[in-house]
Image (cartoon, rainbow, N blue to C red; front, side, top):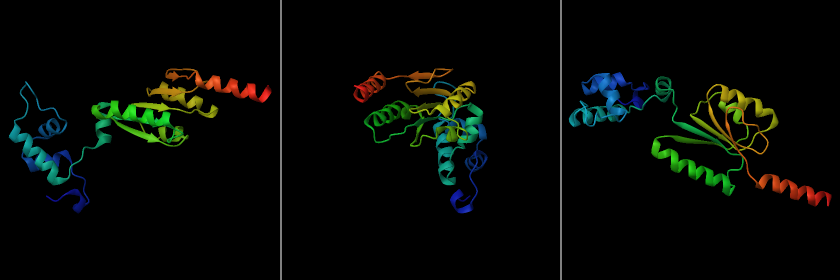
Length: 182
């Protein structure tokens, strides 16, 4: 069999099983990383046959199908409005450091229109660092639908999601007001 890139057909788990001469359950077991350590598992030679067949076919797991089966996307979305800001860079670094070893992919939105993106893309968790007044209802709706949210905002009320506030924000506002009126 040829690789998907030359045939235009995306290889399936069934195609990998056929090429390796094993069941689809065995392919699923091997490619998901469950080797049965300490249990009845899959032998090393069989696992190698499965991996070689997957490589030869150019097989990649179907993330949409996996998400349907597991209920998880293995992604976290970070909506950050100022990507070059040292604080935003620190958030990105911390999330990557924690998420990547767990097989979770951080997706970074450099756009304040996170409502539009979250209307079409699911994530296991979402971090939003700026919320316009017209977006507040969207937060509540996302939380009602089970999206795990963390919002960095001085004024948003926590309604089924976590809110982080900074003491710097109110202090800056007070200083500006004092300078403007004083």
